[in-house]
Length: 261
Image 1 (tube, rainbow, N blue to C red):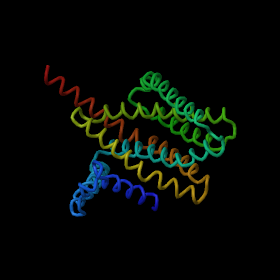
Image 2 (image 1 turned 180 degrees about the horizontal axis):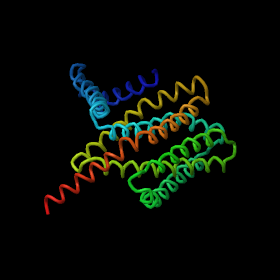
Image 3 (image 1 turned 45 degrees about the horizontal axis):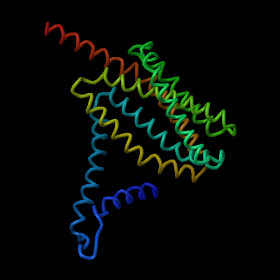
Image 4 (image 1 turned 60 degrees about the vertical axis):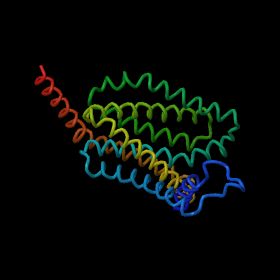
C-alpha cells in the first residue's frame, strides 16, 4: 500500500511541476490554480478504472476472459520484476555491459518468437486452447528457473522459455481479439486491454514489493501459481466462451456477405 501511494504521489508531483522555470519576476501559480490540474489527474485515472470495470462487467464472456488473461500476464510481469532486479544485481552481479547484453538478448528472443508465432498459431486454427496452456506452463517454468538457478547459462535458458512463450501468447491473444470482436469494436477492445495493463503496472510493483518484504521467494510462488491459474482459465473458458464467439462472428460474416451479393 505504501508503494502504491508513493507512485500515485509521484504522479501527482509530476503534474504539479511548472511547465517552465519560475523566476523572481514570474511568481509560481497559486494553489487555487493547481487544483484543476490535480482534479484532471484524478479524473483520468478514475476514467481508466471505470473503463476496465465496465468491460469486465458488461462485456461478453469471451471478452472478459481475454481481459483476464492480459491483465494476469501483466500483473505477473510486474510482480516478478521485483525479484528479477534482485537476481541480476545481487546473485549475478550484473555490470553495465551485462545489462545491455541482457536486454539485447530479450529483444532478440522476442523478435524471433514473433517470426515463428504466426506459423505456430495457424497450425492450431481458431482453437488456441492447447497452444496457450503449454505456453502459460512454460512461462511459469521459465520464471521458476530464472529465480532459482545459480548458473548464468541456465538463467538465460529460462529467459528463452519465458520470452518465447510470452511472444506466442501475445500474438495468439491479439489474433483471437480480431476473431471475436466486430470490426467497429476491435479498436475499443484493444484500448481497454492496454488500459488494464497500465493499471497492472501500478498495482503489480506494490504487490511484488509487499510479497518480497514478507519472503524473498514469495513473488516467485505467487507468479508461478498465477500462470497455472491462467492455464486453467484457458482450459475452461476457451471451449466454453471463445470458440462459440468465433463461430458466431463467422456465421454473421457469412450471412452479411450473402446479403450483399
